[in-house]
Structures are given as C-alpha cells and as structure tokens.
Amino acid sequence: MFRTKTCGELRISDVGSEVILAGWVQRSRKMGGMTFVDLRDRYGITQIVFDNDTDSALCDAANKLGREFVVQITGKVAERTSKNANLPTGDIEILATGIKVLNKSDVPPFTIEDNTDGGDDLRMKYRYLDLRRNCVRKNLELRHRMAFEIRRYLDSHGFIEVETPVLIKSTPEGARDFVVPSRMNPGEFYALPQSPQTFKQLLMVSGFDRYFQIVKCFRDEDLRADRQPEFTQIDCEMSFVEQEDVLNMFEGLVKHIFKYVKDIDFAEPFPRMTWADAMRLYGSDKPDTRFGMQFVELKDLTEGAGFAVLDDAEYVGAIVAPGCAGYTRKQLDQLTDYVKRPQVGAKGMMWVKLEQDGSIKSSVGKFYSDDTLRKWLERGAANPGDLMLILAGPTMKTRKQLNELRLHMGSELGLRDPQKFSCLWVVDFPLFEWDDETQRYYAMHHPFTAPNPDDIQMLDSDTGAVRATAYDMVVNGNELGGGSIRIHDSELQDKMFHLLGLSEEEARYKFGFLMDAFKYGAPPHGGLAFGFDRFVSILAGLDSIRDVIAFPKNNSGRDMMIDAPSEIDQSQLDELKIDIVKDPE
Ligand code: ASP
Image (cartoon, rainbow, N blue to C red):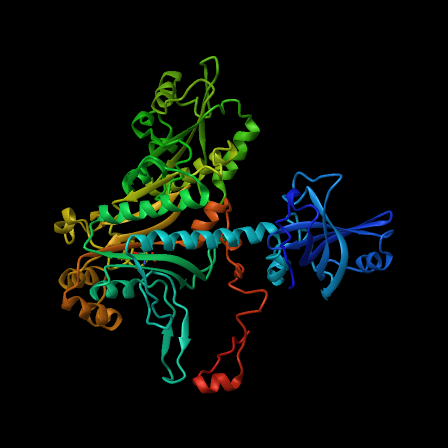
C-alpha cells in the first residue's frame, strides 16, 4: 500500500496509530537534532519529525530532501507539544520510522505557497505546479462541486445532457469563429461552435423537451482581462414554455447552487428589472445591485442658467455618494481624472457637497443659486455629509460614464463585498441594436430571439423600439447568463432575417438546416446559457475567470505552458492544401 492515510486527515484521536503517508515536501527545517518536514498532498499538510538521537541515518536521509520531492513516510502519530491552530492536522505530527524517496524534484521556479513569489507568466508556464497551490486547487474543487450540483438539479427536473458536435458551421453569437480546415474537403472549413444554439433548437424539434449541456464554446475575440477564447457554458433549452417558466426554472438552479455549494439561502424571488430601467438607473444592462447610488436625472433643474456645459447637454445625470462631502480638492481632482481617462471618456465632472451643517459647496456654484442646488440634492435624496457627482452629455454615452463612476465609488467606499451576492433578472431587452458604422440593425441577442408578442406590429414601423423576449441573469454586476424565447415559426424567422439585412440566399446558406427543421412541427421553445467559468469565479470571490480554469490562455490567446498556437509542419499544410502568406514585414 502506498499510503494508509492522506496528509489532511489525521487528528488527535489518531495518536498512537502507525501510518503510511505519501506526498510532496512542502518545506523542511532543521532545529538542533530534529528535522521537521511538511508533507503535502491534495488534502492537506502533515508535519513529519525525524529525531537524530533515535535514528541518525533516517535523519540524514530527511536532511537531503529538497522542495517538492515525492516521498513515502512511515511513522507513528504523536501529539504535538506546540500545536498549530491554523492547520486541521495541527494537533499532531508523525514520528518517522521510515522514508522512501519516490521521486526527486528540480527546485521549482516559484514557491508552492498561497503567497507565492511567482509572477503571472511564470505560473502560467508551469501551471501544473501552480495547480499544486492550495488557493488554486480550491478553485477547481469548487468548480467540480458546482458542475456536480448543476447536474443534480437539472437531472431532478427532467433535463437530459446531450453532447453536440464541435466541428460545425458558423453559429450566430456575433463573435469571430475559430475555423478548422478539412483535409478531406480541401478548401473547406469547419467552425468551432460559439455556442450550441442551433443544435439545442434542433433538439427541441426532435422532441427532447428539456436539454442541457456543460459545454466548451469558442469565440475568437480580442481578449479583455476576463475573457478566454475557449470557455464553458451551462447551455439549456426547454419546450412548451413561456418566459416565466424559463426564469423560474433557472432562478431555481442558481438558488440551488448557492444553497448547496455556499450554504446561502435566497428566500425572496430575484428582482426583475427592465432593460430600460437598468439603463436609466444604472447606465448598464448588468447593474451591480449590491449597493444603491442609483442615477438621478437633473436636466429639467439645470436649464436656463447660462451654463453652456449643462444647457447644451442632452442628458444631465448624478449619483450621490454617501458620507463623501468631506472629500478634499485633491480627491475630487482624482475623481475628475478618473472619469476623463480614455476608458471612461467623460469631458469633466461637476460636484455639489451638502455639508454636515446644511451649507452647500459646488464646483458650479457660480452658475446656480443654493436654492437650485438644494433642489438637485433633494432629487438625489442627499443627506448632510453627502456628495453629489454630476456628468453631462449625450444620453447613452453619459449614462455609461456615470456607470463607471458609480462602480468606482462603490469600490472606493467598500460597497462591493465579494462575499455578498445580489442577483436579478434584466428583462425586456431591445430586439435590435442599430449600428451607425454599417447603417443596419443587428440582433441584440441572436437572430432566433422572438419579439415580445405585444410589439410584433411595430417590427416594420418602429423597428428599434421592439422589445425581445430576452432576459439576462445578473449577479454583482456580472452577466451570469442570458437567453430568450425563440422564434419557432418559419415565417417570422424569415422576416427576422430580412430585418437583419440577410438576403434569402444568405439566410438559406447559413441556417437552411434550421429553417427546414422548422417546417416539421417545431414546438414553442426557449432557453438560456450561463457562463460557467464566470459563475465559479463569482462564487470563489475572484475577479478573473482565468483562476477557475485548469489550463487557461493568456491575454494574447496563448497557452504559455504548451506554447500554442504554433506553426505546423509543411507536410500538414500540403495535405490541407494551405499556403501561408508571409507578412512582407
Ligand atoms: N446561445 C446563447 C449565448 O451563447 C444563449 C441562449 O440564447 O440560450 O449567449
């Protein structure tokens, strides 16, 4: 037997028993005639003691162990004299009677500790060592637990997991496809799925009724800090449902996960907010509702004072930062610099302070009387000691800037506690999004999303105002998932393609198979997909999804460990009939 116990399980009640442990040498220290070795495996760390007086040869062997050597230890469990309350095994130690080196190790390029000295790149290059660290391993354990609970919940509600192909034709999620050349069909390419969207709809036509899949999806996008070119979705679809059924089913899933993984109960139903309200009150379709600071609009109160910045603005919006009236000139300048950063893009920021004594100070005091400023503050329900921050400009742009400022203030004031969870549904998204550059409409979700039945008569006359039966689940300012009720009628689907500027031939070429399928009795259906990596990172209290993926890619889409992507052999290119055009530079 390699081991009788793991390095995480021995307790005071085991004192006196003979055990065999196996694991990695975390560290060893020599103190007088004693050598202490911390032995680590997936389950924990156990202290091993070698006594020079009892067995000097054995102690010599222990002194030769290097970090990350793999060893097997035989010994007897003893009570520690100086206990370590921070370690579950901290009451005991093993008095070693034997040691066997199973494998040596080079000195690792960084320390295998929670507070490692290894930088990001180094840890990614040696990810298999990084994964030995407790704090990283914990994330993968959480991921496993969540996947397990997701399957348990969905299975208990009659969902079946069906795998869909990875080598497919383009899917319409609006990003660039990764493509794979076909050797057997030279000049032709598969696309990797951006999502299994069309397949899950086909499965509904097949009568599967309740489908799910925890599935890899691929999108060739420029990577922002929290995106990965391959990521995992919890993809779901249901037949014979309305929006309400879908929301209830998957609110249940999210609550189940919180309960069984985090021991958090949400007694109340998740709030629902229309997209229009989310934009009006938070300037975002994924508002962080862990804190208030909702926007107030001041345009009607600012007019006619001869202050061009506000007079000429389409929109004047403000937030009230509680208890911030004491901000110094320097702090206010820093906030102004913050909103002026290119990532935020505001031209400037105005402020009004309601001092503790009820007096008012403002950066626009020259233009507005205290009475007027008091009206602004009243609209924002400001209390003495509060600070109002104001941005002005074109409506949508300014709302987005004010959203950034609100989030920034929320962070500054410590209102975005990662251990607090605030979930909501955002509903009634617009069906279309207008693009100025190409002068056409795009589907805000994807082209299979059904319009709100009340708005169908506006499809031609007021296209931009048509609402979709689409919904997003938002947690702590993150879009956790989203979906829609689908179009199941081929005539309406044709119309949608037409409104999206797809010619009949194009639509046939891209989605002919789905349109054909819809001719054979497609049931009403709808569904959604959750970003699984994001879900795990939120529950882990982490900002980045990279930390919850075993082998992630960096911001250039590169796997630093296996060094991919990489060039391929000329013979492979020849087989594929592909010529590489070298960049002349
Ligand atoms: N396929 C969609 C997505 O990946 C989700 C859905 O509509 O079910 O965002």
